Amino acid sequence: MARKSGLWAVVGLACGLAACGAWAADADQAPDAILKHAVICPPFKGDTAIASIYHAEMEKMLKASPYVEYFEGARRLPAFSFRINGSIVTNEDGQFFVLVTLADEARKEQLASHVAPASLEPATIASWGRTIQTDIERRADALPFECRITRQRGQESISLDRGLASGLEPGMVLYVSVDEEPLLSPVTGEVIGRDSPRAAGQIQIFRVMEDSAYARPTLDTKLPRFAKLYARSF
Picture 1 (cartoon, rainbow, N blue to C red):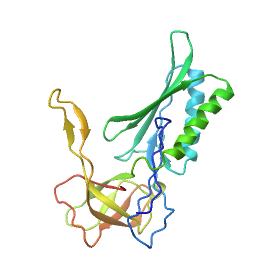
Picture 2 (cartoon, one colour):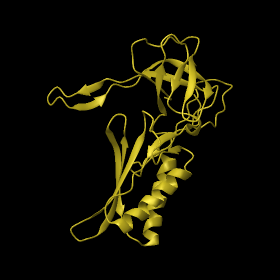
Picture 3 (tube, rainbow, N blue to C red):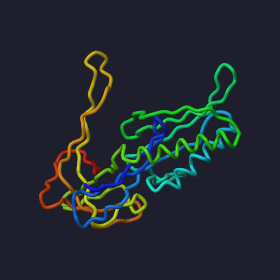
Picture 4 (cartoon, one colour):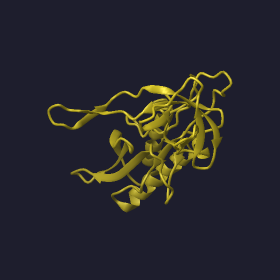
């Protein structure tokens, strides 16, 4: 499967946010197609003067990234999205640091975090930005593109909760997966992981609108009847 993808992560982190190309092995499909991850980044917390500058830099990088569909304002988030939380914190000596975390909103899991010195000095801000930008490229294939599938009773076609801005195009083929079951600790009962996603077939996009798309199962696919499904690239 030829693909470009990725949720770039922030540094060793990963503020990685990028989109993963989701072409199944179809010779007709363009190898350079890019699907974008849905990302939100609320205003950074902490010292207002410093936090606003670092948040603005983060927003600038996200909006410029070819791998990110950036959501802001009152725009409705899709089922699968990623949140970048940032804050300016201080240590016992009064030194400032910028802390950034990356979270999977659908699964309520923190994926990574990154901390670095922070200040109003342009050189410090630029160094932080270069680190994040480098990691965008380095982690471009880290995570798959995912979107929720909705089925209407009595209809063969299905709808997806992502549209044109995500990079979806007619003719694209995505895998279908069933929501993973959480793995619980036999001692504490806490969620300690999830089953690995398994492909249950494929769907092909035939119509794409601004915030949604329509697809049909491929000829060799029969979707599970009673399951919560989503489309993804592996």
